[in-house]
Length: 84
Image (cartoon, rainbow, N blue to C red):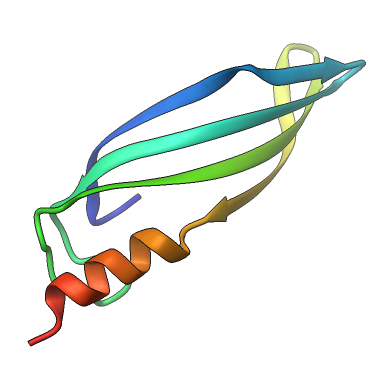
């Protein structure tokens, strides 16, 4: 994600579930706000957010993916840090 550098992605186990050709995963993203993100100048803050993704697998490849992340707290943190 541009602006969020040094992102570390960790899946929460047993947060990965598979049924047939579908996989659902709970994620936590950790990184640092070192570049412009959504028009917000870099703050240098450590940031994180949680997400859920659903992938469809065919022949060992992801053919479709849906991703929902709860980025509200992260956005509030960098907005407050960048406020004059």
